[in-house]
Length: 390
Image 1 (cartoon, rainbow, N blue to C red):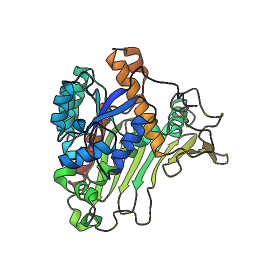
Image 2: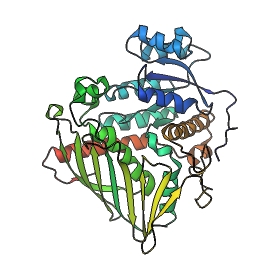
Image 3: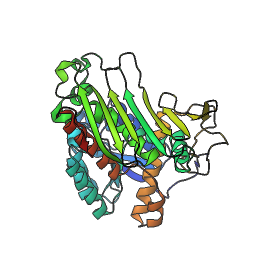
Image 4: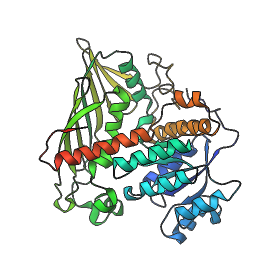
């Protein structure tokens, strides 16, 4: 079970850029970060409107003078305080991630950033270099990666329960944008604007999630890929609302990735299936407490979170916040990730390299790989769905 007694002498003083009133993702960050008491929200630049930012911050319980008009003012003024912020989470549109992250690292802050972290792999690598030089933790918010049953799947693959990996099928295909929802949804409007979202819509917004899970579970490295993408709601062109990617991995495995916002009638349909020479596993985010395990020649099994037959000696599997049979969900996954981010930040601050090397969390290297995926998919799709080297 999760150890709720784990505390720091003082919580990490933490701020947010973006994630203001009405932001679903902003709420997820705050709920996840503060669940275990390792982080304390003390400041924020939540909104581009200073009055709205101050009102929102005050209603969250902040000192009104620490609800800032912009992130640069926040970084500068907080640096002058003895009790200034130590870390920041960035929950803003994609186009702003690089500049805010760069400024945060220059201010000596640990960073947690939404994905994709940048528009280009060169920018992402620059942030990676800056974080390493400053000895700051840079986490990327792949929010589904904290579910315990994904770590069970990872450990089963590592131990050889599936044998050699042959096929990895990934999908994240909901139906909520089957019509032109951006006409009345501000959140959809920026996601479908290339100047703000970057060169991709559903591949960046959805596909990178399950793509990260594939690498996390299997460790397989992509050799080359082929992508085709469509704008079924034509006003979204050149951004895609549907995409299919074929992948070849360096170990000889193959895979597919389907990302879609026009899968009419679907809620999420984020699934990953890993097929080995002996068995297969499948995880579905709408039923995150179960892992389907299919051994050739035997009845299919549903493995449940919190049960004694799992590899519970592995930390990521043993992070159950309530006993098996009860539903854990999205906020618990985010809390598990923020817990790891917090442990990494504390270790970095005291130069505890042994702890840093032992901790797993989605870091800036994972962010770089996500941006590389988008660049290669766009290159492939925009050149007649040709194969490109990864």
